[in-house]
Length: 81
Length: 117
Length: 227
Image (tube, rainbow over all chains, first blue to last red; front, side):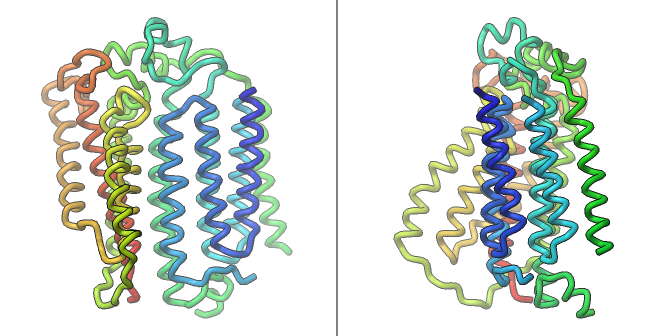
């Protein structure tokens, strides 16, 4: 049962990462990289690592996305080419 | 079950390296670096997982009596804790440099920055 | 064309390296020698229920000191490159937003402090709690455009907790087994809040330092100027 949950989470993580690299608008790419951090944090719970899950959810998914947006708000928002 | 984590982490590292090597936009390179970093952390935590055991917090009497056969490896988790925070700091510094480059050249594309010199 | 071929060559090399790791991987059946020492003797030597926090704070305490130093370096580099803008007028935020953020802020802050102080009993510790405290502060500075937290308080807090952290390590060198040895304070009763020697003290110092450093970084990033 845990293996099925883990495989579904892995597929979502890979899909979000591919989406973050391919999409043209930078805002969507940053939010997709935040989603990668969020689902990686759930994967850490299934691997019996609660401390790492706390840290990844707070820093990798919360603070990192905000820092990206604080810098992105001072420049153009879309990728040209 | 640890093999799933190793494959996911390896794919994340490959996707991150592809974004760093072939994308033209500086922000996409920083996003790719962050994705590769997350992939490395997933691989390390997956390598410390042992089947059928539980988290290394000895809060019940059954765990305290015989912990060596009942908990997963705590050392990779301690290493990844440190690595996540340091990865965040390095990404923040990279973003500040990207912003200074944008202030100076007016564009985020490395091809146009290379020509503008 | 040559560039694409080069990229495919590099990616294929990295992929083959990881394929060798994934295909030849067999699940381990027992803990390694260092990990089994930490797990079996950790509760007896240090009296901390959370083994990961014991490993991070005491057994691998020098790595944690290095990480705190790297975070300090990051905050310094960010402060060096981003200067404050003081001449630009900022827009006023609505009163609903500022009041609601001031109501929610204490709860998030208390959750962060709880995670920091209970690091040796439940999942938690200095870094996790420090990140949550920084998130609480981020809510305040994002909701109200004119506020800056309190930059002098953060600087003073960061320096003082850093000095006390190294001081605790040196006290361990003088009074107990070695640098950053947690048995410099009494072991106490297992499961109480004030137990496990100096681990709650070091966790609190790390939490304060990391929280104030991350808050300084966020305030500087928000106030970045047009140079």
